[in-house]
Amino acid sequence: MKHFLRFGSHQENKVFINSWVKNQVQGLAFNANVIAHTPTAIHKFININFPNTSYFIDPQTYMFQLDPIKYYSSAEKNTHKKVLKKSVETLVNEYGEPAKSIANTLEPLTNQDFEKSLENFTENVINFQLNYLQEEYNKRESEGYEDYDDNDSRISPQYIIPPYFYLTFEDFKPWLELNKKAYEIAIDNHSPKLNLLPQLVFEKHVLLDDSKIKQIIDYYNNIECDTILLWIDDFNENDVSYEYINAFVNFLKKLNKSVINLYGGHFSLLLCKEQYLEGFCHGPGYGEHRPVKPVGGGIPNAKFYLPFTAKRENFPQAYSVLSLKHLLSGDNNHYYKHVCDCNKCKEILGTNPTADKFAAFGEYEPSRKTGREIPTQETLYNNHIHFVLKRLSDLKDVTIEKEIKKFKDFIQWNKEHKEVSVSHLENWIKILDNNGK
Amino acid sequence: MTEKKLNRIIFHYLKNKEVNVFTEIPFLSRIIDIVVLKEEGIYSYELKLKNWKKAIEQLKDQRIGSNYSILCMPNENMSSNVKQKIINELSFYGFGFELWDQKNHKLIKILKPKPNKLVNRTLSKKLETNLSQFQ
Image (tube, rainbow over all chains, first blue to last red; front, top):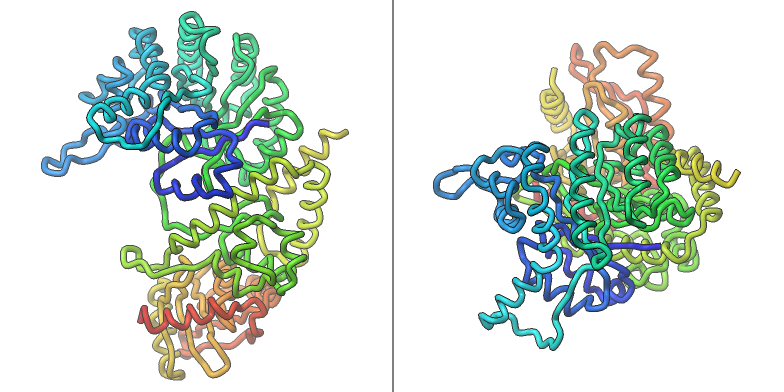
């Protein structure tokens, strides 16, 4: 099973380099805009902390299909004129035409725009992944800025992703054709030297359209690759109806390639155990699903990963479940056996896990900006570390049988207490139970 | 009637009856509509015109800092069928239920709240601190 932790911003540094986490991370994923924003800091981050950990860069070429003004521009300080965000400006300069043209037009690109210069665009996208971090580091080093001692600082990603485009329900075929062309160009020019992996991104409603799914399967089953990177737009395993999650698993069954789900959670982990997925990826506490069209963040919340529901619950819900189950009664065997025995939980709860100690996962402070309370940085950190450590141990320890039993027991308990939503667990059980039959 | 107006009316009504009445108190990323501090503990009020199911979810979040939780709605236009549904659901969690009688300008106590079993000492103290900080 392959597991990748996605690095979303430098605020998360602390989580990744936590000594309990760092030694267990199997793989890292970066989005191209993060790389473009702070290349030398990322170079340093990888080189110092994860020199032997495999990583890949999502080139995010779908973003040029979206309206730049709406999704990735900001207003200039003095003139208030809309311009591309700095990181996107770097990307379009690196990727060249047709992406470069959006800096002036601020208009989304069509598939015809790409057709004209697809070969060069594909080469530039590949070059960015292969060389940008190193080149930027070398530039800074020659200017005397970087000071970390490092004899062989050359780093390169494990997988290279050719340009890929977002397949919407309405506008499906032309972009699928473009995906094919870009992948073929990459294969012709770089296979087998580079480990090229196609990335497939589509709207979740496509899952329910047999004809579109057939077109995807027909193409991807016949291309030269072993593994596909998959991103279903805003597909939340914990929230979608049975119809969607069932269609998702059926889709995986029909694909004769290994699949890495780029935004997945505990259900993806279970699908890895069932060998429907080869691997999955998420951030340290979020990013188990992601919309293609970026949305602004709301008020942050302290969310505790609750193994009973296999998802991050708002602190009051997690606390209520644990209290009602008498798991915060001071008996350490209870909590550590039935909830989590990660180092963060042990550090916070000590030898007698109590309700008062558990409050460290839900500390809030006043925010002048919102007029509400927001979680303290320490609380967010505690929750992230617990989440990542629990996920990393689940990769090894979880079995389908034990999970199904745990979920069934919890659903029964929840019927009597009506504390949290468990419909996702019911959906998962239906699918996983049927698989054994 | 808007929820804001209901809040204002009930806040002033309670203020005439109790000493320590507070409104719009932030607590764990939510805002508690009204908090009354009494000798026997902290009472949290969630006020709603219609969406009582959402109110119950909010009360569930607040109960970890409050000793008693109460849903308060206007009496007008509430069918006995809906009223019974709400009572059943609130009883399950031990929450109280009060109806605002606009005509007679008073709160009618329908269901007495039970002490919240899930109240957490640390969080309850935090809520008490917020009463003075945010008022």
